[in-house]
Image 1 (spheres, rainbow over the protein chains, first blue to last red):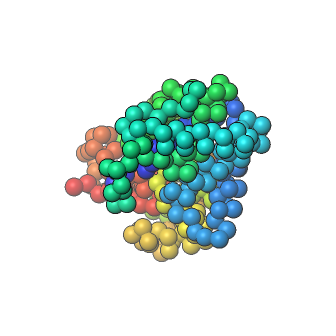
Image 2 (cartoon, each protein chain N blue to C red):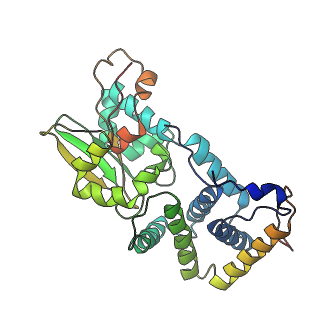
Image 3 (cartoon, rainbow over the protein chains, first blue to last red):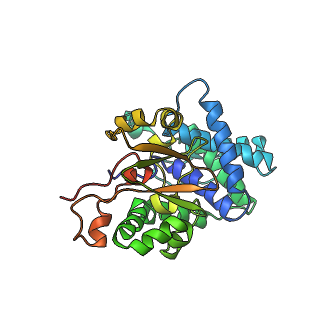
Length: 103
Length: 206
């Protein structure tokens, strides 16, 4: 019955980000739960969510939405950073730590 | 396994999945704004991977079985009793214990998202977060329980508790027969995660 707690490192990472933001009062847990619930409902409109990968995809979308609504993370900034990380992975030799240019 | 046979001719690092990159972008932005401390994230992950899990809830249940006054206090104010045992924190702020009896079987769901008593049970399993469970357990709890291999007697009422961001539930399963001379520790080993959600029963002793 021993299942891994998180199936993918990013599941753990987005979980921890959310808990941390709640611990420090940046987002309230009821607001978070309401946003996640809304995103789950939207994602589940045209298919059955299995509670695994699709659950954490909804989690990421919900955190993006909540932080955008708070003015804390704009879509353009996030897109730029995602591109920067993609570049960093593509240009870092395998086995080396991947870092963003300019840190 | 979809593990790539390309691995060996890839000169660069393996590109993470799209959501993984979105999470990295979020983290980077929040760290740069001073809203997130990366060390705190590592500590949270370590806590949930190693220290928090159903073993905590099992100790609470075993003590309730072994100690009638503890059981009464647990059913009266679970939050206080549980935090005295050192189990508190996120999603543990208000916990209500509901007791299974010969006449009532309790089962917990979160129809909104996935509210769950983390300090006692850890992170919920995928099925608890699935649309199938969340939608169906309210409508046809006996059918869902049967799919978990749990067929309840006709006369036993099923109560479904819908968790919220404010209140989470712990099912106190019935103590199995033939366990009178077991220690609290041995009793705890009989308490499964599913028995504390209500989709299972405590194990019978060997």
